[in-house]
Length: 324
Image (tube, rainbow, N blue to C red; front, side, top):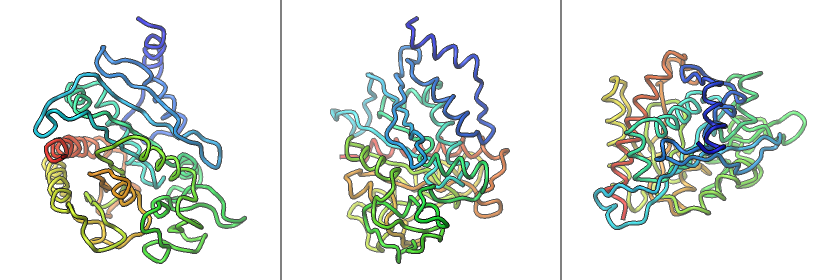
């Protein structure tokens, strides 16, 4: 047993992570420390820092790969592609952090997860907005923005209005720094959106999932315009496949559509991902439909994670078949 694996093994024994709870950032970071290891000689996982926040917190990403590759559909003969997943672009979406952490564990500890890592390399950011998440945990549960101050009284930018495609505060955002939809003074003004955009451009991702809440929807570009993307039918097919898979687990109905059919929004991450060359970018809006909203009870964490895992598995199968 090599030294790195032994240390990770001890961490796993000493630190039991509870997937049934909304964990603090400190507990999440301790859990991520167990991922610098090789799982049963199959899945290699390591944690990287892709950037820092205004409050000097690290933005962590977990990379999960294996040298083995599954040949399926049009994946035959293709080089192995990668998928990027982020959680917590809005810190009040506690269920989004919980799902990404659950899914990390699924990839690393189950045979079905190993199958997915054979298909694709996975890059997962459990907490894209750690400053905001700490603030939401400690002071203001429904906090939406990051914590970069515009002035002494107006704090934070809505990261999902700050990406450099279709950026327009008048299109689903705000030019008022005190508004929770504040788009920032300019596209990519924020360290978090800068860090993720660098990652998108650095690696040739085939898919991108931004896990958010709430609404029970799989949505895809464009958001900043009602015009369809050229491959709308393909994106719609994979969104439908995912939504139906989610619905089939517990009977909670998920739907799918182009983002702008719900609302036109400028500067969102999934639109930027598409513009950056990622063929299959989606926002995944988890439970519920408004009964609890962002305050989803902890007893719904596992059912939500189960149905969303089913959805992501079905979506990845669709991507594998449809990518060219």
